[in-house]
Each structure stands twice: as C-alpha cells, then as structure tokens.
Amino acid sequence: QVQLVESGGGLVQAGGSLRLSCAASVRTFRTYHMGWFRQAPGKEREFLAGISGSGGVTNYAVSVKGRFTISRANTENTVYLQMNSLKPEDTATYYCAAASLWPTGDWSSRKMDYWGKGTLVTVSS
Image 1 (cartoon, rainbow, N blue to C red):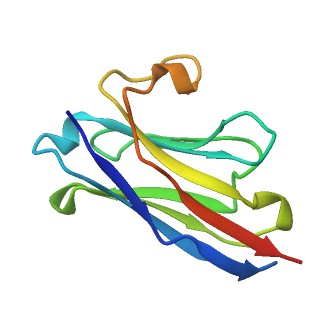
Image 2: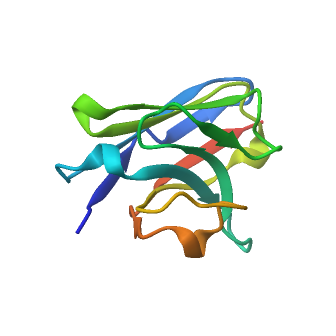
C-alpha cells in the first residue's frame, strides 16, 4: 500500500509560482512512476506531468509544457511539481498519483494505482 500526501497548494496571483510536493510512505518509492493530475470544479481529472521511477524520463501535457516541471527526490520519497506563470484557469485541486507499471500510450487516471487526497491551488486574476 502506498500513501501519498500532497502539500504546497494555496492562493497565488496570476503570473506567480508555486511548488507542490507529494510525500510517499513506501520504502520502494523508486519503483513507482509518479504523476500529477488536476481537477477543476465541473471538469474531468486531467493529466499534467509524469516521471519515471528513476527520474530519467518525463512526460507533460501540452497545456502545461514549458510552465510546469516535475521532479523527484527518491532519497526523500518525494515528487515535486514546480508551477510557473500561473493562470486563473490553473485553479483546481491538484493530485499526485503512483503507478507500478509505466503508463504506455497515455497517462490516464485509470492507469494509476494510488492517489493522494489533493491540494487546492487558486490563481487569482
């Protein structure tokens, strides 16, 4: 069982930055591929960024590529999402998720095995 706890959300003005963290309570953290997703009210959950267990491979949604950066520190069992140039449309609850198998094709929600409870990000205009 993997427990994931997100932190770092909050209120930020448009154009600002936030760094989200996700701490995992599992000794084999490096064997899990990690992803960040978000869900805005009334919308479906969407993939943002993913990173392989070793950290050597990353994948981004077109909507955030160039603005968001995913990284991980396996010695700290933590994955990060650096978010820059935030826009009001980035307002959502942000979730981290873990997958034991590399999500070939696309990083859909159904391919993830474990989820955190989310952290709210609000971007004001």
